[in-house]
Length: 340
Image (tube, rainbow, N blue to C red; front, side):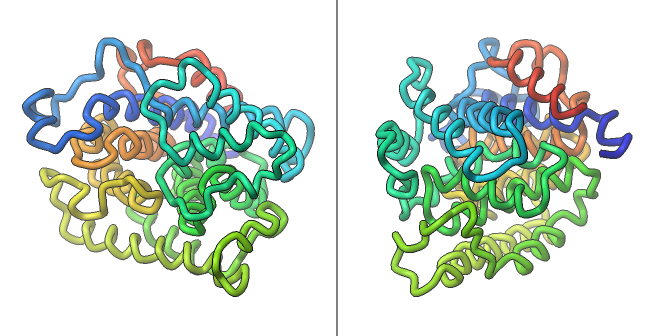
């Protein structure tokens, strides 16, 4: 870890940023842009609600974070060490009375199946789903130092696969974690899309069997390689759209028109990145642009906040916002742990 990474407190910045984006976008989800503007006023002036409640996006991010911490407290990160605490956290979230924030159907169905301790996780995974629930929660995998490339990629895909088994959900989650990691380590925003494209091409045929087992056999693909290539190819396609949007940036235009509404994993990644990359040095503006969007605004803003916070650090966020975000204690505690 570099001195710069320590000084900027990337993990704290990313965790606070994702929760702030989630809380800012939660009240605007399911609204079109004119309705948001009528309700909130001009988007560059949007304020965090006084009661800054988050959605299932932050709740499930915390579930992944706690499971990751528990697994790594016991030794090196391996599939057999991560599966029990991650399954436990997901089932506890599923049962919690606080799970009343419009959770996604895929997560609810899969977590209900994971309650059956005799069921292998691959049989709970929803193989046809590539919803953004797969990657709106993956940021912790980009914040933990000391992981190998294989551990980070495998675990990022694995946490997605427990609920969302579609290959694009796996690839988009891997790519999202990689984006957070690159930004936390000091990569420049202008180079980010190119770095992600190279990463996608390098990993296009790599099925992480150690982490995923025989998940691919639940689909109709002739091989594991064909299965995962489908996911990476869809991610490469959305990176094309992102690059086109950045060649002719239009900050006043609804970002969902360029890179999709974010209900599916690869679009949530691209539209969250677009909002961040339009305003790489203005993190609060990036969150506001993401929250004022016609699609899955809380997930888009959640990811934009993770990217902006990983890049700029904890000081990116106004103290009066950070002090009133729901789950602030857990977010700061986990961030401080990983910033060390």
